[in-house]
View 1: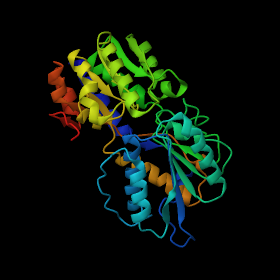
View 2: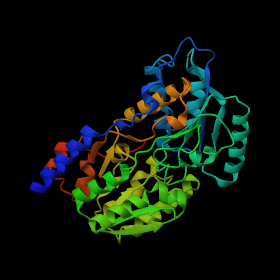
View 3: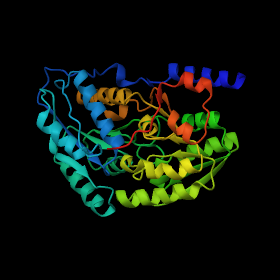
View 4: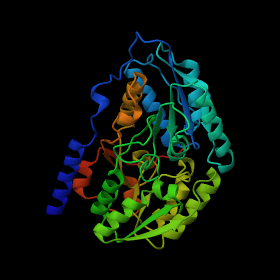
Length: 384
């Protein structure tokens, strides 16, 4: 009981200390619009391909921009495809009313996770940026961050939803992005906290993980952090490497094959963010994990717990992430240099658990874990 009480106390401390950003020019540049200043600011969007975390981050940021007064309040509709950033961007371009900003419809780029069009897209976007047609561009994800974190343009670039902008080479250090026009949010200890918590709760000896064995793939999976905790705690990493930076069907097929392989080798699994984690196929992806009675932890967050992963730490409906990015965008549009704005932000975590998944794998959640949980799901949701 003493160990569990210490664990619960740790949860409380994490909750009270998280959600903090380091101060720098945050104190000197306002993030609300200066209505006396000139023409509308033009915003563009660039991503490597469709991914639900990207669209959720985009929408949370837009909602927060409205709350800060940059645009009129909007009722954003539900979209048929939750990963279709182009449909969302077009809707924003056509429907947002604002004297301050405009989402430029033509300033949207997505390579659909294909290498061949990616290089052309990158060149086209950089050529567009050099023409001075945008005042800010959102670079969504690690692919986008790597493509636009270059000295060939001067348009303020805000990198969002990148697993590890430092490890993937987008930024120079935690204190310096390396380019005047570049800003990338980073939570340096997020994945360390996740893996430590998972081990505290489950106490596994062999942790399964799937990743693509490239610089970007290892970064997406937070492999360095997983290895750090493995050394601290003395558990073994059971890895399955495969191609995940590919089209959606191939990514899913490769991920499922790895899940089947790891089901016989690991006693728990850390499910990382990648293109194979598709909600409409979640039942098939989780089946080998359920059959092997393996506890699972989602790197991405509580939405995957809703679809059948056992545990996660997640932000509250992306609210805090959206608020953070909206304030950064506001300060940049008011004249702050992106490089001088702090990038370190620890998002407030929420513990999520799926009791139906626990029942399926014969896992009995400790009482103190249930007491500390903010989100408890009693069923597994499926995509209709």
